[in-house]
Length: 226
Image 1 (cartoon, helix red, strand yellow):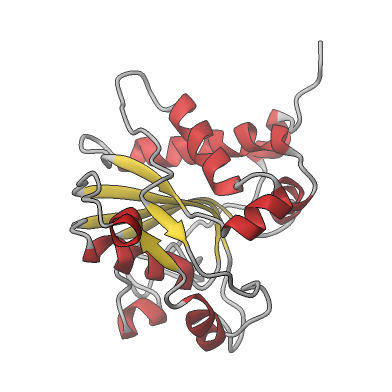
Image 2: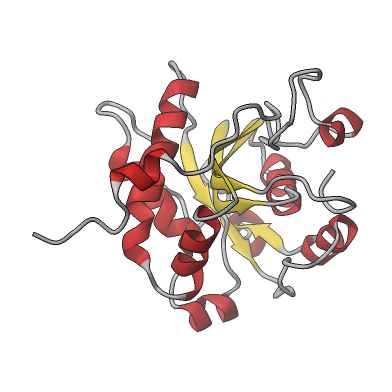
């Protein structure tokens, strides 16, 4: 019998935020404020961000292995705790669809797959019986190639990602399937600028509520994230 890609003991001991911002999932040091400083200053366009882990060792290494080393067998075990988080959060009304954050076609050709799409498909397979939340990977397109977000400041990330996404409606002048409530799926949320930009694009097309689902949320770093 083949061993599991990640043992249950390791998964149980992965870094989890004991306290986090209910809006953007930023790990917090205390419970003095319901929202983090960034959300208090300017609330993001998405309703909430739900993450399974803090982006720290060894989760950060595993996610990088998925993205850059084709370790796709790691997706399912990392998704399982996220599905538990989602099940606890959504008591009744789940989103209509999951929308993975798209890659630009150039990046997709280079990598060979979109890790956000793989995560969304794994979530769909692991959802509790009776829960129907299909994946729609066509509604949002990344029509402008951008530099890597890694290493950029908040302002740099915001400028870099602005205008990078468009809906199928805007591309092809077709009326897209109308969803009231969607879940935007990604591997990691750092400053949240990508999630904010895609949320705004979706809301312009009539989506009323955007939730963000991710494997991990990056903790705050001085001068960068809050």
